[in-house]
Length: 399
Ligand code: PMT
Image (cartoon, rainbow, N blue to C red; front, side, top):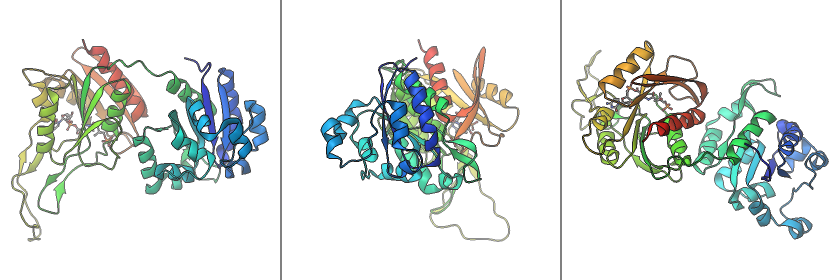
């Protein structure tokens, strides 16, 4: 993989991590690519345009309304010139502007005007990163197809410790190499159906039984399959993730709804992946009215839900390659192998959810993939990275 001949716009917004941009440009230039730097006004408080001009060998652009710059290379040509626009550091203000489409400076205008890949390397205080507004904005950018690289964790310039550090220049270089040398479309012409998120089993008009699944793992699988050229159907339980571009989504609530959608789509699919955390039981009767408090104890009668993935694996005709997940807190391998066998799956992804920071409702995960006579451990990494590895492993098994 290399970056020879590639054209990268590095957009710098105003954060302390901007000081790392000189090193980043140096690393990129070592790869024989062209780099043009765009800075916001506040970025110039952290690193000078002169420094960036010296390391990139190109004049730095910083104004949307500069007649001289527009005469040389107007912002539209600039947007068309790039193979990649990388915004590093991406402050939460710049991220928020991008999420709603504000174009009030050269950098945010380029992002709207470009057909190129766009990636951001967030950098901010850990509390600002964790704020739901920032998290929602990041999810929105992901749903637009913008790649989010990082942030890393550790000590921050403000003295806090946590998530929000910009990735190091060498890590960003690795991401640029991967982004500009895309994987071959090994799933072109294939259809992949994926279940994601939790199910909700109603008890009455206001209450339900559910679990902690956020849908992140299933949505990451959908993105990965799509990036490798597959037509992707995503059957999603209720989650707070924007609908991904280019993916066919079926929104469901209960296990019975998910079962119906899955059986409809499975026979049109080459691969079926059950990543959803499906409730095993539902209420025997859903009360028409809100159930009233009665005494100190109450008993709910639950009945078994259909086993979605076992129904798909049992299809006699047009059966897809069927992959399950097993979220376990103990005896992970043993339970996963039991599910592989009893549900007649081709493959199962064992997910040890007893580990802090992995599994349910987190950004990272670790999996062990099991086939009848084979296994492969995937150490902890982002759900996006894991998803790509899982999908490639599945693709390698298709005839
Ligand atoms: O959504 P996230 O927050 O990103 O978390 C991801 C995850 C932890 C939910 C995911 O990685 C995962 O492990 N999903 C499986 C969750 C689970 O609880 O599986 P299970 O062991 O109950 O079920 C085994 C398999 O049977 C799964 O493929 C499941 O989708 C399927 N199943 C289960 C019950 C049922 N009635 N129908 C099913 O199809």
